[in-house]
Image 1 (tube, rainbow, N blue to C red):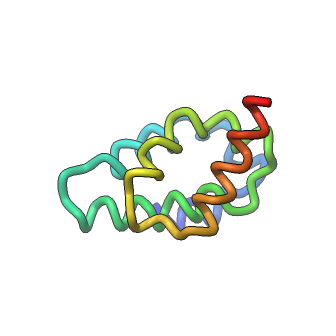
Image 2 (cartoon, one colour):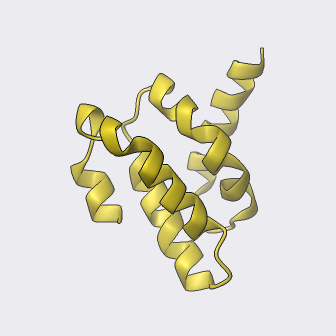
Image 3 (cartoon, rainbow, N blue to C red):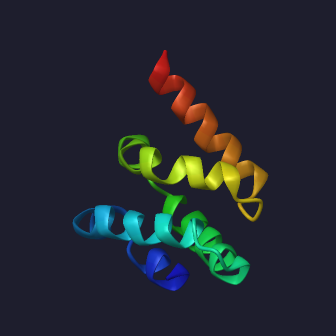
Length: 89
């Protein structure tokens, strides 16, 4: 999934955006730590290089699971929290 996220960047990602975010959310909430780790690596690749509008579209689905998952890098989490706080203000 991480490789797929790397290939599908920008406009190529838009048609699959919701479906991929749903699969990543399922992986981030899985019971197995290996699945959660793989999903967090894929989520990082999914979010890198996304513009703000596209990222804001998937945050409601991914952000709660990212916050509860210790495998997500601190930089990715801080970026997500900053973007969400900007939405609320």
